[in-house]
Amino acid sequence: MHFEYRVQGGDFVRAGQASSQVKKILKQLNVSPNIIKRVVVALYEGEVNIVAHAFQGKIYVDIETDKIRVVLDDVGPGIPDIDLAMKPGYSTASPIVREMGFGAGMGLPNIKENTDKMKIASVVGVGTRLEFEVNLKE
Amino acid sequence: MKIGELAQLVDGNVVCGHAMLDREIEYAFASDLMSDVLTVRADKLLLITGLANMQAVRTAEMADIPAIVFVRNKTISEDMIQLAEDNGIVLIESPFTMFRASGILYSKGVKPVY
Image (cartoon, rainbow over all chains, first blue to last red; front, top):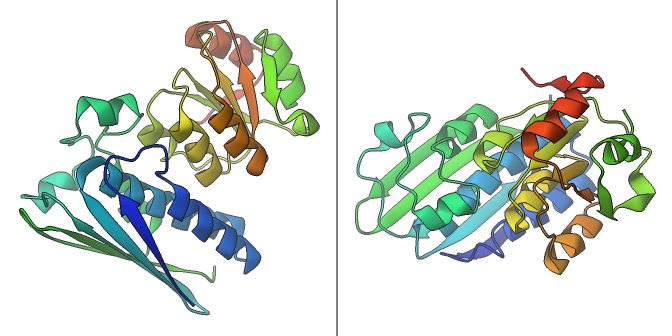
């Protein structure tokens, strides 16, 4: 099954809508609650990253029998130093993002923690692509 | 502890989710930082926060958190109530500080996550 969602940079009211829909789909597929939580926490962190840092983005979700693959593709400033961005506590988030309860520098490390495979590629001034996979069978 | 009982302990006003006040809470996490909340693995978790916005409710939805206590007399918006009702999340307003609400619930046996 393939799903696509559009995410608007700066729109904190709608941030999380894509993650919410994916959660409902996984529930309908009877995926175990623990795995659903790992997937949607990682996805929500990624979705909030697009809202917080990029101009716009798209989320592509592919659900297979044994795993879910997610690609979050954004048009935005990109990440100059990915190793640094992966460090817990490092953040370039604006004060507005922090007021929304994010920008603590825990997003990317938490995505890694909740997923079985994670890959991130970025071009400064162009955008960032984050891909992750979670096995759906325990 | 039942959600209804803890709501009373923090002098709380239950704004939505009245049908779920019998659900059990075992742990609580107090934070205004949703990024930190999303790192918590515990089930039957109560969120105590002063961050009264949509992202607090979204975070609860993603992390399977059944109830949120909003401390420091924050006002809960209609959008937040709608989202909470759609996802079966209890929202409670408390006039107490985060420290006071946390202290009361801790002393009554609600556990910290670490």
